[in-house]
Length: 73
Image 1 (cartoon, rainbow, N blue to C red):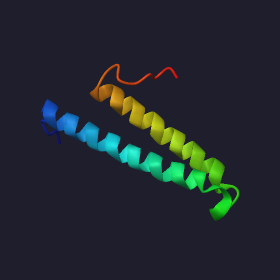
Image 2 (spheres, helix red, strand yellow):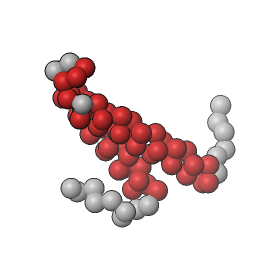
Image 3 (cartoon, rainbow, N blue to C red):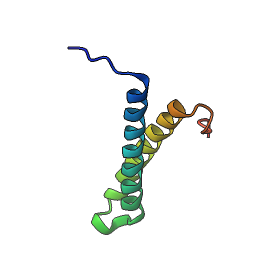
Image 4 (cartoon, helix red, strand yellow):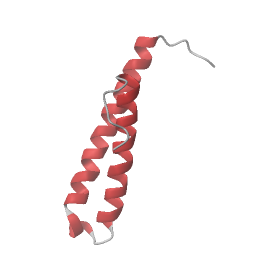
């Protein structure tokens, strides 16, 4: 089953995915900043999740607006 999707719909989907990744990044960043409140081993895992969602968000930003992010640093 294949659906034909125009460029505007693809862009909407990528933007929606980028926004979701940004929300997840904020969620995990806040959880990481909370430190050991939910357990001493949760903070490092939260940092990893936050970094992963940040990477996804930056890549999707680059797809939407090439050159907008400094992906090297």
